[in-house]
Length: 384
Image (tube, rainbow, N blue to C red; front, side, top):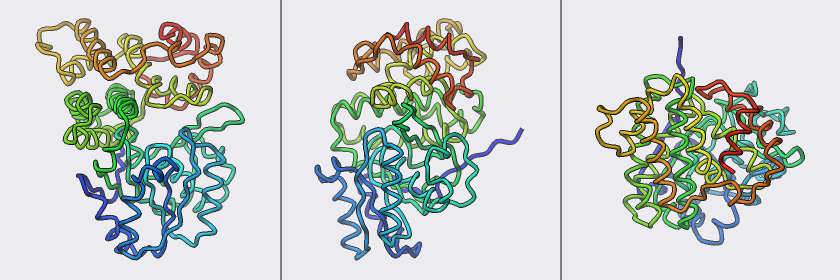
């Protein structure tokens, strides 16, 4: 069996790393960039910390910021139009997953205009050309969109979150600057951090996991366990550690896939505009209980150990499963994550439709336990 691993050409880490942006743009010969961000980041000044670097270096740019929290087909299409009219030859994306995912969609379509409907990019689209070059600067510590070959766009017309998988979309450079993450409110820090934990755990037990992905995912779980609580409470060192942890988790899952936590979270975003990190965090313990009955069961011992559980060597597999799930749930509760779907506005009468949508999600195929819509429905009911 041959395993593939795709990463950025260049990555920078650490507080103040954004200062390397100008050199990256100039050394690559880009003449003008499309500066993709969102209105909130512009208003609070976070985006300005990056545009200031461009200004000081005399780099031309045009800004596009019309992006929803769960970016839509229209957001991408509008962005493509702005890119074409701007005269830019590269994209600088400053934001969380919504912004970077939108930038990926813009970059792919600008280089492959036959996919201008956006919806034809769902799944593994056979695009011929690499995306317009993207330099991504994340402002949240969760999605790892800056290092993945995936992006998610909402098809509002069909109430569907489309997972697009394309090696051509990965940013050429990632600049992971924890200074840009210090302005996150507690709730966003908590949700995105649990999103990163979900990536790491699902990436560790997914069917596609192998030695290299296991190595990075386990380390990501350990880093998140050690730093998420303090990060949520504003500790600068912990936020820098979380910035690294979410990137490390992305290195793994981007290359090996995920599972039904994400399959079940995506319809919640499409139906209710639920923040992706909240959906993942809420569902994770329930899906882990379900996936304990799978070939991945022995891996729960390592998950428990990475989550700070002591004496795992003396535990049975069943004891390790319980300990790992308890540790995940305890961390989630400690940072204020809702524990039931009823708490976040999910309607009981929608559970059947949500189950069908989740079953048809591209992430379902990576789940370590073969899954059917009826079983997904039971998990939703348990989480309700």
